[in-house]
Length: 232
Image (tube, rainbow, N blue to C red; front, side, top):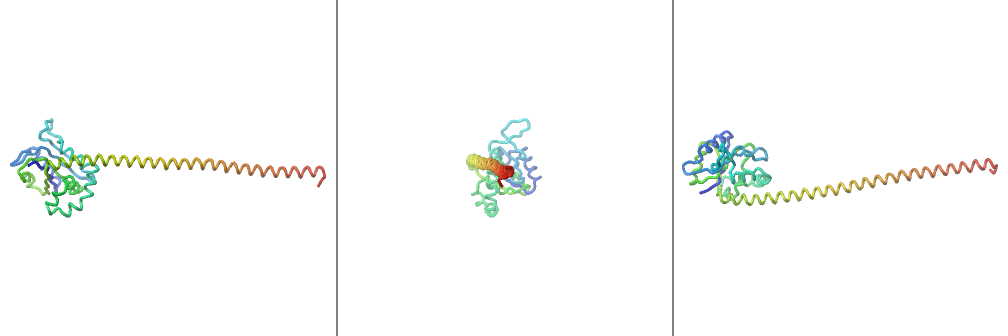
């Protein structure tokens, strides 16, 4: 049976040791490991610490396999954050029932159950269940299995959901920028209008002052003229 097996470790150093052992011996009694990744959660971010693809031929025998790369990419992206936040209570409250956990997707379980500071090994395994558990027998772990074909389908759906999420986010950002530009446009329009209103008010003040000065000058001229003519 081909499975994706997730082992969450209580002790970080044990996860590193187990991963090293699996890499050095990917074939065991009743199981074969095709791909494996060592992950760690820090805050909202799930990052890849190490990985190998047993089928890859590289200088240091280190590579991220196709399925593991997809899983890590999704868990480390925005969808992984959403999945972790959305199902944490569900997974935590039902974890004693393995049937309940298995009914939740692999991505949801991993995103929700891998807590801040914890490490996990995710492996693509062909096994006679639960043969691969022997690789973790010496360590304190929580082991979860999902059929590999179901995980592959889930990865495809998650990619589509991620693309849709990113598209919606872009549309939202565009709408916000458009609204922001419209708001700034109205603000600038108001400032320009206020500038002209201020100019008009100053012009009116100057005109009023000029008219007042003119009236005073005319009155003084009239008074002086009358005095000169002796008409008063």
